[in-house]
Image 1 (tube, helix red, strand yellow):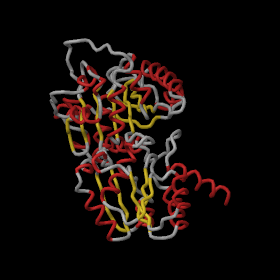
Image 2 (image 1 turned 120 degrees about the vertical axis):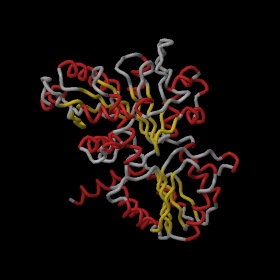
Image 3 (image 1 turned 30 degrees about the horizontal axis):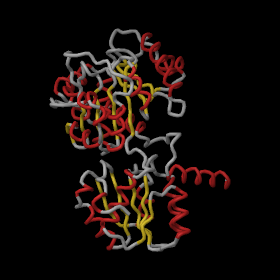
Length: 411
């Protein structure tokens, strides 16, 4: 166990605790007052592993689930198998048990459980175990990164990126950061009614000093659960950088923020390509015309080759139904690209114009509109709440496979 002085603070993560005894509940409550837990959002409720199974049958899971288990090992493992069918990719599990059983410990570790603590636990041990999940040598990144770019200039990819980030933060209650990479002409500051004194360029000019603490200083709070790293929006210099310039920023963000949305400008520089290729999800925003079709095909083909083990880029139609503009039908557009759209957003000059001029998001102006419903559906899909991403296995993806295998054999 780490000494108290070396326990690293937790990043912006959501933690749900399911306890069975008042002793564990009291320890968790005391831990929430510790300075190292300041960024974490913690919810505590009774129920143990059975409560966790019930809670997540139809609900998204947090970054970490803490389960107190009073029963024997076979019961715990059985309930974890049930929980596997409901959990999102990337969820970690910490178990607090009352049996000092080496065989059970090994079985839980084999399944990918982050840690097994034997009760009674103290506050420092509990915080240390949580911290190790995100800072240990085997720790995986916290964040899910989403790059949004337009197939053509003027298709509204920045507007999509900003509303997507806002929806993830507000509707899904996930700590999110929007990173404006349109360095000379970025509009995120305007769209969120912010004028931050510093932003992404502080990190670009001195990449060797970039760490989680520096990122914390660059964040500007826009709304609950939502922060901004702004572009300079200045023409005082050119922005020709090497491919690796923003790698430290991306790495630091993934280590500390659950959701990162990159607003990528319509250009193809070494650094822009690097950001897009390195994202967990890529959204290509396109209007239904021939130039967008050609460019979207080039982007999808290029990125599919560069990201062979990641999901194919997502296609999002925007500005559909622009008056008097001939359009390629969505079905024909998708067939030509061999890519089904992840969403379709209609042209609404009044709605989007009002939001832009007021420095507001669509959810703030018309929260029940079809447009906002489309953003919510997009957010759920990209955050893995509707489908499982292939490639990186965590504890519950492993359990999910085992559970599916049993069902197939039974059938």
